[in-house]
Image (cartoon, helix red, strand yellow):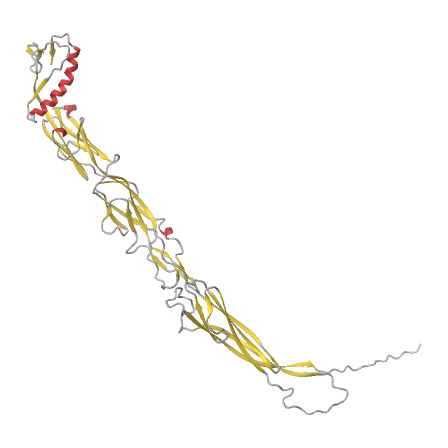
Length: 462
């Protein structure tokens, strides 16, 4: 078998290309900066003093450059027949030209571009009362207008902050742990006083300023104006401001008087025209309830006194040794309930006292005055008498043959109805007439029943 010949046929591929030099534009460091001559980079003036002339100016800066690059690009094949022509000056060698433009825009209500939006410096006008942040944007565009050039575009944004203040945590959280004294219900005499105090869990609280950065400055809640006290009745000595105050009770009795203490802050100083507030509302830290008491009356053996100058109607007449040698005087409060500490304060001819009760000795004869004080003062008199003799107004004395000089027998006529009056004569002088009348009245009451029950008797034993 004969070897075959492999014929390799190379067919050249003809291509036409050329090298073209391109110029590429570049942009870098596109930055927006504020003009300090017109204000701060933050939109501080929420309420412009000279609205509508309130504006801020911002400037765009950037670095512009270019570089060249040779690029192989396809070219049309040459014509089959050479055509002679003259070269035109500059043909195929056109200079590259670029044009740069700027475009500003704002995003957010309350702000507009005032004037040109295509210059390096832009003016932003703010609406009165605007509290929103504004986004300022600039787009820098480089466009090739001639020659073999390639343009570019870069942008930058800038937030014009509008600082807004708020009170952050409610001031109440700083007084929740406050301790108030007195801690329980109190009773005070009319015209008396009560010392009150409060200790907060903290003497400071935080406000907050939200802007380019969040800050939390301190606010004082204990100061020249805080805490302050309020009362439903009475008054406070001096101003009623401070951690310790003295409350003055009214001159009239009252029940359930409320003494409240409040904490308020001294707002952190902020620029007048920045938005928001640093002023927390006052918070109640505690309450003291007080009853205001006076003496309504003194009572002793069914005799009542409502005066500090007792007369016959406020005098109790008792025989010597009455009630095994002691009688009690009771003070009744108004309003009813408890007494203030150490009240009523007893004075005069008392044997002992405890709370609203005083004890008077009835073994010695004479006039005794007992007084009690609880904002007001009341007194009562007690006249202790020793009886010298008893004698009925009617009847005849007879000898009862008992050899006891302290007992006497009288014969009294029987009557269908009637009252036997017996007069007592005291040994000591204690307003004899009045004492006799009182003792006689007591004896009359007891003998009224005796005579009625013994109508058939011819005599009554006294």
